[in-house]
Amino acid sequence: MKRLLLAGLFLLLWIPQAASGQTGSDPLVRGFTDGALEEILRGFGYADVEVREPSESGTGSLRFMVEGATVTLYNYADGDLQLWWGVVHPGCSYEIINEWNRTKRLSRAYLDDEGDPILEADLLANAGINKEMVQEFISVFSLSRGQYRAFIADRCN
Image (tube, rainbow, N blue to C red; front, side, top):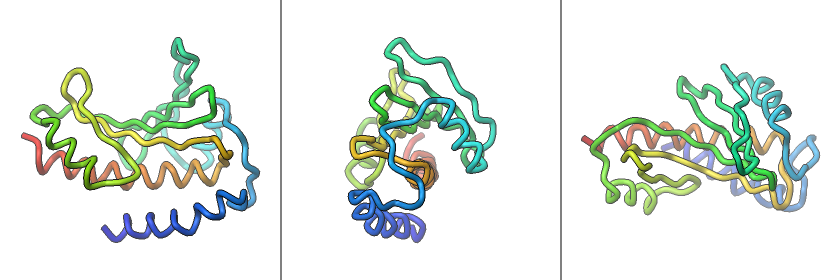
């Protein structure tokens, strides 16, 4: 809980800087190539980074390890990024997932076609993004993922 509060405080301080384009030493860009994201992830020390083939819609993706979990980073043609993590865990109902969505911010949950709980979050590139923003996006998602994992384990059969 303390880490989530710290992440929220960081975002409150960081958002006005991001709006003014003063988020640090890296310039803001409209998006990254999959190769650039691979370099960024490796540079931040993430393990087992794998660039995957783009989908039919042109969306590229990368898989990498965050605190022992495989996470997928989708790289959309408009520069937006989306983090995705799922787990096979039967016994979750949409009511349980809705409870997460009602009580949490900065991520959203749903049940996939097979009934498994999924967690996602988006980083919009409209005003520009940089390496530091990508790192913080992954960091906040990692906190949410840990909380979501505990939430699912506690409430789903």
